[in-house]
Image 1: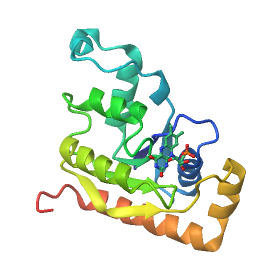
Image 2: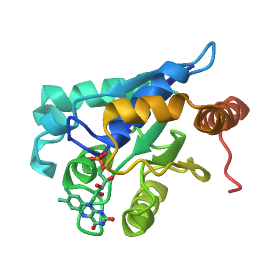
Image 3: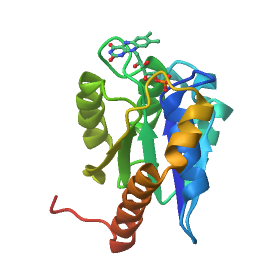
Image 4: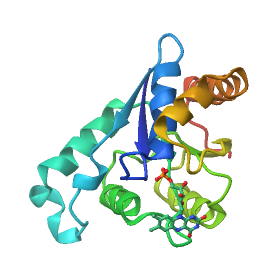
Length: 181
Ligand SMILES: Cc1cc2nc3c(=O)[nH]c(=O)nc-3n(C[C@H](O)[C@H](O)[C@H](O)COP(=O)(O)O)c2cc1C
């Protein structure tokens, strides 16, 4: 099974990205998690650039999504909302087939950011029928360095929480799509 991790933070020392990198390393046998690194290179979405005009970097995002059985998104809050780069990426997906019906879950590397989480939940529930709001992992990592994040997440408590979160998501994907939620 292949999962795609997307960080909403373009920051080199991002806690959200560092947490997702830990997920990649901690994936259970048979599960491959890869981190999408192209968010900051995507041009600003315009309907004029869809179809034959779609830029190559956007096709690369589409391909990564097509290959994934599920998506994990982790994002900071910027100005009480979704960071522009992440929202821009989601805007590129709206009229395509890549994300409709794709299982998506959220993780979050901060004890704050409830406004962004509420907005992102609304957006994801709009773009995929398989957004699983109930599968969620929040770890208080704000202001930690990537090295500190790595060390913390290797600790038994965090490693167990990550394992449970990833297992739950994998199991739900294996069960197949549901329309009753
Ligand atoms: C431009 C900008 C705006 C921010 N706005 C908020 C905000 O509205 N609410 C909040 O709790 N944190 C806000 N923050 C703090 C980030 O959400 C927080 O530091 C987050 O943990 C950073 O994630 P990262 O380490 O993955 O980049 C903001 C940070 C930046 C750079």
